Amino acid sequence: MNENIHGLVRERYGALAQSGDSCCSPGLYDEFTLTDLPVEVRELSLGCGNPLENADLQPGETVLDLGSGAGIDCFLAARAVGPTGRVIGVDMTPAMLERAETARERMGLTHVEFREGFIEALPLESESVDVILSNCVINLTPDKAPVFREAFRVLKPGGRLALSDIVRVGEFSPALMADRGKWSECVTGAIPLADYTSLMREAGFVEIEVPDMRNADGIIPIQPGMPPLFTARITARKPQA
Ligand SMILES: C[S@@+](CC[C@H](N)C(=O)[O-])C[C@H]1O[C@@H](n2cnc3c(N)ncnc32)[C@H](O)[C@@H]1O
Image 1 (cartoon, protein in one colour):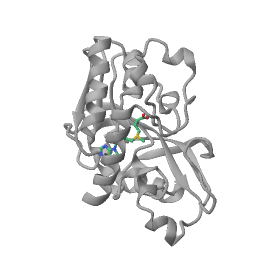
Image 2: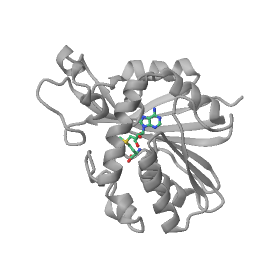
Image 3: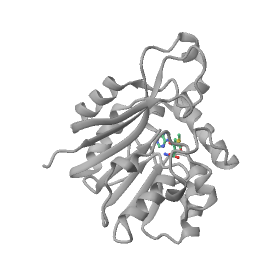
Image 4: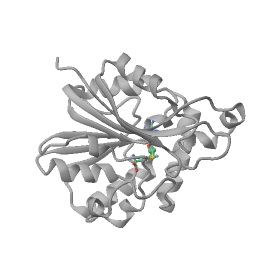
């Protein structure tokens, strides 16, 4: 694993967890969806889409959120799967985990838990999860192939994946690549959609679909000279046995 990138990313999201400043676009969820969530969760939505809209969560399901941040998608998933279901958020940034855990306690949710770990080496048993969500996280990892291999390992046969993430069209300039802060701002870690879906296919996923893809302007800070960046929703399935 690339310690430098992980360190940079952890530093940025640790600072955001402590300040409560949101880096990205508000308004990915409608107000009604967010009622009942504590203000510290609503205020720290750092995603680039709403992966739950494509997850079709059912009561009783076990859900894993990769890079759960302050927990927004975990808490929305908890509502969808109900008390007979289970939600696990994994994140590598202690301050984010603390913020999410404080909100969980405040809401009295016993079917949600947050675990510290890397999404490249998930702290979960194989074939233990029905659905995996992730919102604006995989672009941040320096090595994306192990993330999809791990997602495949922990899903039950027939399990599904619903992601929102940043992808690019075109190349980053050397100057942009040299600006280390741009990686943790969800910019230079973005790869082309075709490479992203190839990695998923290589990990074993099938039925890979892209229900929508929109210009990321207004969702992440785009500056002149950047190649076009998009926020894509991507779904896939692990084959039955
Ligand atoms: C852009 S924020 C998104 C948070 C959350 N998904 C949301 O929608 O608000 C990225 C999160 O992913 C976590 N993260 C980034 N790379 C990770 C990795 N390799 N393993 C575990 N967590 C990671 C960061 O600590 C941060 O909390």
